[in-house]
Amino acid sequence: MLKGFFNILIKELKELVRDPKILLGMIIVPLIIFPVLGGIMSYSVQTAQEQAQKATVLVIDNDGGKWSQEFVNLLNSTAKVYVEKNVTSLTDEVVQQLLSHYNTTQIIEIPKGFSENVTQHLNVNSTITATLKFYGVFTGSGIFEGIGASLIDNLVHQFNRIQAPDIVLTEKSSIIKGEIKQGVDPASLSGLMMSQSIALPITIMILLQVAMQIAATSVAMEKEEKTLETLLTLPMDRFAILMGKLSGSIIVAAVGALAFMIGYNYMLFSFTMQIPAEISVDLASLGLVPSLFGYLLLGISLFVTLISALALAVIISAFAEDVRGAQSLVGYIYPVIFIPALALMYLDISSLPFALQMVFYAIPYSHPIIASKAVIMGDYWTAIFGIVYVAVFTIVLMYAASRLFATEKILTAKLKFKGLRRRRKKTEEEF
Picture 1 (cartoon, helix red, strand yellow):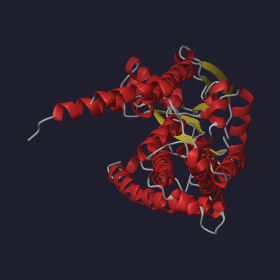
Picture 2: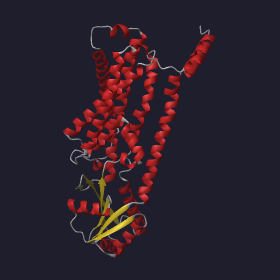
Picture 3: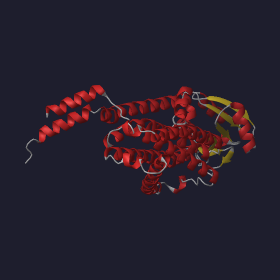
Picture 4: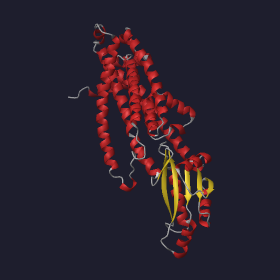
């Protein structure tokens, strides 16, 4: 029944391995993507470690006693410490002035009576505890946002281990857009924001990938089935044909993205339901959800990015002979979609080297993700800049695609790998 099976199997494997489009798209491209992502993540971890070692902390010592000095000395062994005394009123304006003056994002307040409470706890062995107040600036920068709060937790744990268990407790607050939010742990807030911010990059990857495959397949199928010639001879504007194909791809991709988002949000909801109520945070009350204008900017950013991806897919697919070739050629674009999405999912672009920042800004498919973080923090100009840049890029691609459809090159354009094609032809002749 399976006579000749292995001969056909060997033939197909040789053809697939020697097909340059498949070789590049399925083997070489992944070998590029993951090392690049690994390098970015390694750099981010190294940067976070360096920042932790060079951390600058402002200590407001309203106690001035023995134990407050002991804690400052312990803190000074780990971070660079500035000390202010007798700042009794920590209003939003005062905090902003202090942060700007000392160029720091972390403030520790040692309240009056701190040393007295520690002394009573040690001498009387009472349940009295001393309290420190920690204020951390939330910038929405990335996975290492809460490193300052973790540093303070470690120091308090070390102090308690030296003196007495649970002698010092920490009250944490976050500084969000210049306002102090009492009782909001920066580390917990950062973790919650990260879980929320994962959905958009994944959706963008899926949406762009599906849309580009649909657009490329649409053109390649017309060429493969020899119906493109007939379509181009119809009494209608060729630009209308191009826009029809792009619009159809957008609609189908949007339906697929909607189905994906429904399933993903259900999974995310199932996960967040397990978060204890005491550490849950209402992001809307903290002003950490996009405004109506922010959502509008995000929608425009995603739309122009999608149009540019579709136009690029149409141009690339014009050089394919069949559907499989078109899908393989489109696969070459995936690294410039996946790398920004996966990297910016966890990293703050401002923490990267300037040259790498310019690379991410130059990639049009990274701007919806950059915009998603910017509008949450009220930075609308970054989103607007991205829209303008991607719109210009899209106009150039649309012009190139329209020119391609306006000529007969859409029918004859081919991308050839001569050396590998000869070897493939030789393999076919052997069978």
